[in-house]
Length: 147
Image 1: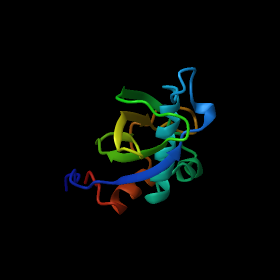
Image 2 (image 1 turned 30 degrees about the vertical axis):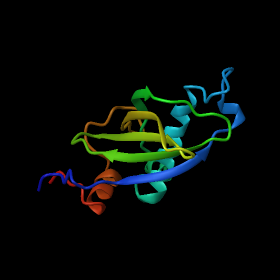
Image 3 (image 1 turned 180 degrees about the vertical axis):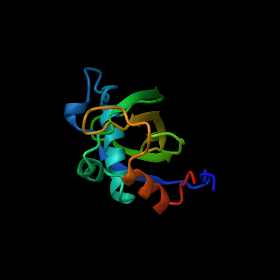
Image 4 (image 1 turned 135 degrees about the horizontal axis):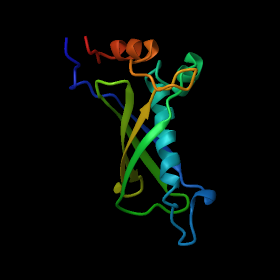
């Protein structure tokens, strides 16, 4: 059976912009959006058990970010609430991909779109060419199978 690319796994979380995240122009510093993506992935992992940070850590396998692509559209300011929409993006290889859309809650203005890619590293810090078992199990659980 080919992977069901129609399966959409998405999570939405809300984060308030903190003082430590703004720059001299009183806007969220561009690097803060990377943290918002991590907040989105963490929330996604809690919403779809089996692929969260605790699951990855428990497996002894690491999943470092190897690629981040970000496009900024509008600013976020102190105390704005950013709505982070995190979506799993299927790829057939041993990798985790997510897309993100961030909007300012007060007016639904688009602030950022982004993509991240994570690869799997084993206990010996070697790149894994095959998917870890927990990831295969997770994909099966949510109807995303390569078989």
